[in-house]
Image 1 (cartoon, rainbow, N blue to C red):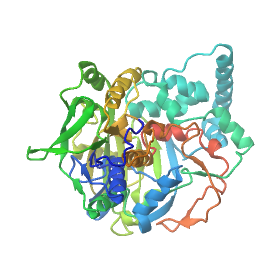
Image 2: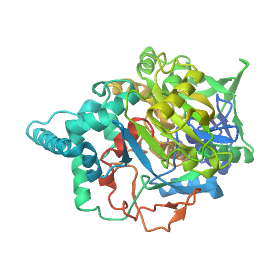
Image 3: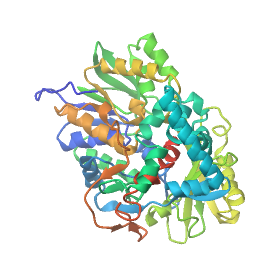
Length: 524
């Protein structure tokens, strides 16, 4: 969406719907430039899916988010907001695969060695057949299965992608759109992995795979500090103020109606509006109501839910990992992380640690219907009995956080309904949509912040197409840069700067990296 607001004399009073990283980035930037802005949030806290929850001195992110952006201006914004709370974290990740632990991300040699010589030969031959068939009789890439098989061959698809992807999305890969794979794995394939392992890429490369920036006291600090900046400039971040109606007249939004926890309504008017609430919901709460075809389209799009189960443990450490990805279908969660491995300040004292396990689910399914106590017990049982990571008597306590509509589901045919909704939103001259929720696009938190900043700049008179964010053709976690000094993270470890043993082999290191991590919506 391109800005339509260029007049310097126009009223720029703004209402932002949603106080996640994207909405708060809009509010922060506008407040910094003297614009009156009100940020509205249904929850009692800021941060949305990127908030940090504190319990008994332990801090838990909702799934483990990291900061990395290819855009220098966006990185500078993060540094401005987080300032001296920034640390660098060295990434160590593994995959639990058929009862074995495999280093992750995998170089091509590691990946083929992990599956054994017979399967490795089968995988290479299979990929060669796929490439030859693609040349002789090209077929359109329609489904997620089509896209993975085209990039890696059927053998590696069935080994590394199929089980995990279907665990995450709750559907066969044949029912998911190939657009998702194409968006998340731009330019990646088995061929590029082999080529880059033999002939390293030219240029210095930094990858989040090696290291990333992180707020010392949890990712939620990014949203908290942006909210502090909005309020310090004399503006408001209103919590417990969900938007229940969006008022429109012709092609103009005139105001919103908020409803608090007690059911009291308030109408707020403004000149400009920015929405990071779910696009489907935004279209459903228009008044007068949106056209019937828009309502029908909004009901055709679906999201995937996430539940994070957070355990507090009486032990110093469980693993060295920043993330562990779990393929085994008998283990219900898809990924876990240990917050202390990100920052030592995530625990009350260094004799303790914690685990966050992520369950991917949908409304009404067996996982979503489990009670919080059942989820805590299930997680403890998986960690002790199935993985052997902990003893039951080390569990000090636990709790669950439910995150509905966490990830947009790119099911087959989603494009038609999505285009209908976006066309409807584009018809308004003072409404912009941002973030993962707001655009129904699988963005990382840095992309959400970027869209929030660009929306603010549009209001200030610039002209930016927000649909161009996260739309480049190079793998989005690769950035070529000048050498930078090695820094230390909160654990006293060297943070990789992309120039060590992995610095030039990003593609080789990513045989399964993008698909495994991003299939779960965990590319944060």
